Amino acid sequence: MGAKIDSRGSASLLAFAIMTAAEVFESATNGGSKDFSALVRILNANQSWCLIGGLTANCYVEPIYTIGADIVVMTDRLSQISEQLEQARFQIQKFEHSINAKGQQSQLRIQFTTDVRYQEFLSDKKEHEVLGQRVPVASLDNAIRGKIWAWKDQTWRTSKRKKESWTCFGSSKLCPKLLEKIPPEIVEQLK
Image 1 (tube, rainbow, N blue to C red):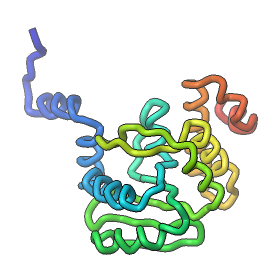
Image 2: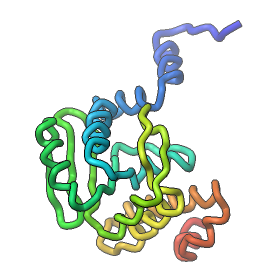
Image 3: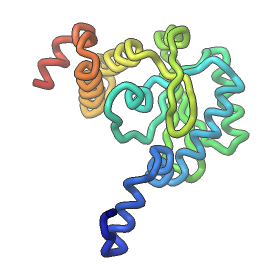
Image 4: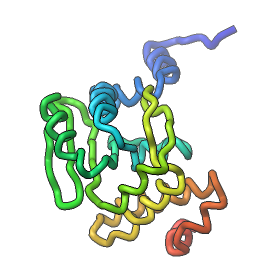
């Protein structure tokens, strides 16, 4: 026989426990999965692209909470994609190493890297389900490589660099052969 629900709070917890990842993300980001769907439609129309950040890591290791979608696209498509996102009512901000987009109401943070090193990730991407959609994501090797680049970037905040090292370590626990690809400095920090 099933468990008895004795309060409205318990019922809420039970409902939350059976939500899909997309529903949880939608709730936590105030509409982020809808914005993610709109983003995917635009990106698919502009081929070639892939996820490279936390949402990618979630495809390979135990999921971490993230409200960001980090993406690499063909460099020559980035301005066209930015225009299409603006037409879809996303706010666009340009920075030295990225172009960021945000929907009007959701908390989803979209970041397109302009770092040319990531362009090669486009030739080694895998299809995964992310927030209820089949999307291209960087391969595990490339995802780790991108995290290591971020960790080594001294211009990033210490807390951001630490987060990148934890993602690397979590991935190496899932796939021990990756441990040899992770700099010893990261491994030492996490002991």
